[in-house]
Picture 1 (cartoon, rainbow, N blue to C red):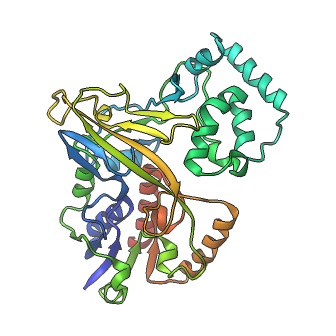
Picture 2: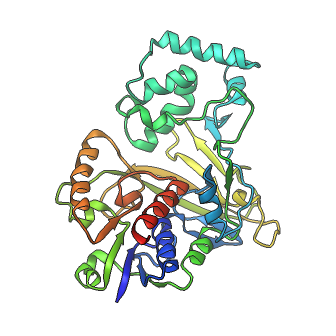
Picture 3: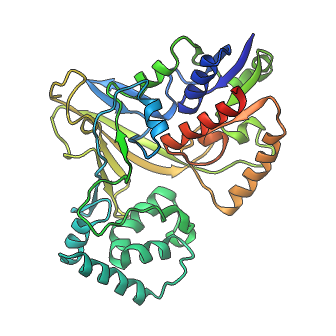
Length: 371
């Protein structure tokens, strides 16, 4: 009946479906959730676009990707400038001269650089072997202890010495007063929310929600010549090689009858004692305005709690350690032998993707298979 069955109406699935439709293919998109958008789904509450599955800020240096998403949405000028809260002490993220001044009282880049170099030397780190050593080599012991260690161990549920160094290698460290966390040429939030953007991608394409592919896969497999699968790769193969580990996130979301809770979209709580990792105040992604440009009198906040994933939870962050990568390698070999199925996205490829990288991967795959 269809050229392509796309399993998952998130960003990967929606972009592939759009490209397949544009190439003249017949497409059916299914999703076990009751809405499109995957983890970038936004729900409107009192004029506020609430990021239901965690904050998503679009950022990229790829002009092709930026031009692509702008076909489906107009983006505002939001710049990600999170704040770190350590027992009530507030620090700038990314780590920059504001952070170094608050931490050490230094006022020049040379002083900050010398302080970091001194602490790196005192720690005796030359070749970082784990996340702790990598962080200390980048920002010194004081900043690691206050602003990295507690947050990271809450997020990953593991001691920093047991985490690989690569997790933190992209940590922005600047000897300037630049508060822009993402060093990207293009960034912002789609006006009207991500859900509306995905809906526009899927215009004219048949979509069935509340539909679980794995619950009736034989029937679905017979409906299409090709399948694009964006669900968990281990679930596709019935966990035959083992269960892949993820970190999950639980959200406590509140509508508050006040106009301003924390004055910023994201505040990270970096001490170990605070149980949540961060609080998102969603209205500040759109500067406190609704789609019509009016001030919003209320606010919505979400506290985020990181946890070890178990079946039934929503998988968020792949745990790409040696053990899990070995399990995934077995599944990847099995996936490569599937001539009918394309595995894509964060769950299908067991790899964390930023949104722009997801779109890059889909467009590359679409060119390869659609011509």
